[in-house]
Length: 281
Length: 328
Image 1 (cartoon, chains in turn purple, yellow):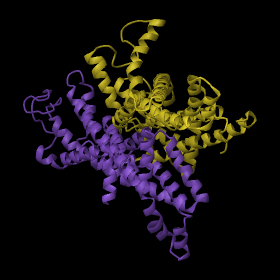
Image 2 (cartoon, helix red, strand yellow):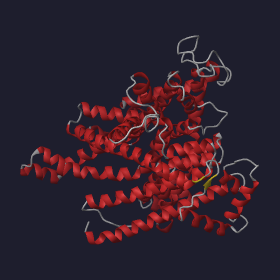
Image 3 (tube, chains in turn yellow, green):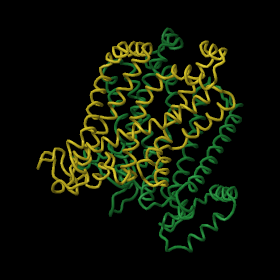
Image 4 (cartoon, one colour):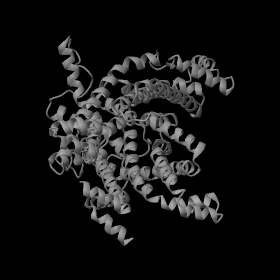
């Protein structure tokens, strides 16, 4: 573990990412204390510029506090990012493990299925899913999970393909272990590091996807989100630039932090690869 | 690839493309049935209970009283004859609505793609030739930034900067309202409106292509055939252009094919921000009106566009790379 941390620390960007991420988590956790009450409530006059009348980041067209919206939105973004990633991982790992371990016809079928999902325009599909199943937080999570699992399935399949003929797996087979327990206790733990790296990037893209959906008005109508804030600021951008600028910066910093953390994890988990990359650059 | 093997290759790819398109139609069909409520009301777009006659007509048209597989067959036949349904909201066939908007979307995505590819490859080449210098740092920062920025927000920031503050470029629409322009002036007018949306959509891919070009060029530059060319005394510029760059383009082509779907998805957001009158904007309006027939049609058409684009990149790949093994 200390070895892992030492290698992670060597990537300075990754440390910065971790700090930013910790701050976003703190903001999300402290939102009810920092900005008590609902972020939907009127706090002051409409269109107050940042820094005036106690509004740090200004107020929107209905006099709501933009800063409060961002703090409360952080909770939703992180939650949607995490839950939809877990859901996408469970679909992707199951299908990938199935295809990679069994091979043959099963592999072919799963890969065709995966290719299909990679071909269709995933954002359009996500819009369609949320629209048809009515916009709620669960339909948003469902739609994000449905369009984000294919890369996981591919990575897991490749790992399983290369691991299933290794000696320790053959040994487990000879010992008479069941297939399920070989997959879960022998192969999967050895395939974890690419999955871990991928999942931090998936949280990042899930947050982007959620913000795009709620920008289009497909967010849960009862929840304050970053995408909704930007969408609300779109039509009044000439009047109140702060309404769309600050929530966008929040999304940018969070997603950037997650991407940096992903790179750090990749360096720490694949030391050989990191050194190669350091050499080439 | 030997030209004699090209037809077989194209045929296999064609069959695959048709299979994907059929799967999309089935997917649409299942979605209509999975939606809460009567499929007829889904198609009608919840246009109010007052229109019982229209609903009854839809039920008959879709054969909703018939068994499931017959319904699927009716739907499939409809879509394959380009009958994508009728938008009750706009009182027009969906196919007509989409085909009217298609040219604008093709112009936008085409311009964005051309911008991303040319600027990306140029920047990537510069970066690879001067590793560690300014061009190199620029693409690293560009890539990190655009991987993390929501597309629609980039669009809004460009509007804020170039339209609101500097007042250089128009911020919405495809042509100036209220002026009659003709010939070159009209083209220039559309071009001016095109700059911001195309830049918004292209910037992300620019970063992607620049990174990709840089990485593969560094990889290819180490290989024996490049060393041989240098040893033969081929001038440096020619080595870069004819030996390194040509090989480095292959992954860019592959990637462009993979990302075609994303590009079209992104155009929905960009068209929404800039009120660009393409199918993305059509989808957004349909979304506001809960006009599902149009949404399903847009999904079908964009998917077909992606499949066609993939066919083109496959073909291009086979032509550019003489080594490519054409299987499956």
